[in-house]
Length: 256
Image 1 (cartoon, rainbow, N blue to C red):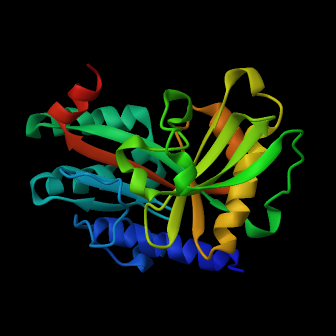
Image 2: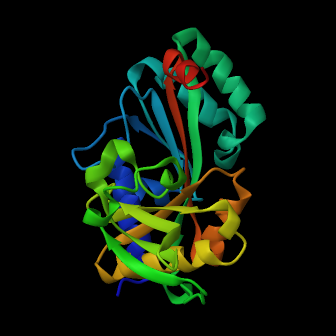
């Protein structure tokens, strides 16, 4: 079984592939700026155009940036200490300067990796079942939109379902977003929440992914406290954060 050091190494190597740098960049005490490039094996959910992507594993900030925005980004990370680059007052400074070039801050999220020795085996009063890709055919519904992705069905490799009799009441699915890293998404029907279902199916899927030789990872907005609590309860720990810059028209389209 992989240990925590191996898991973090794989994650950093993947992040390096996702922006066009070397994995060692994330361990530097200084901020690093490189020319943005999506590698051939980057995570499947990244979509161009991307003006810049900021990633921090807690030591510094590494930024992949296009030539068009290079001067603005370099000034930004020199102006603010690395973790302050992800704080709203400072992002307002960045947004004002990006606007002139036709860009805005778009996505921000926190990512989690498993702490292998602390992945719990959770009790659950409902029946837990392993579901394979063929079992998802009729599950691409709004209630399972976090666990499964209708637009990338081919990446939904397997999951863990919780059943009340024959009724599916909770689903944790994993998407093969990279060769070695599979992302977990979770949904529980509202009337079955606060019963430990989410953490039971998340931790079960987490263990199963590791058993298959892959690294499970989990993503949440900072404001989604329910999701953050589930991650921590299921044996995940905060690993890295990302902030992505995209053209203004793409960001504005999301707000229509």
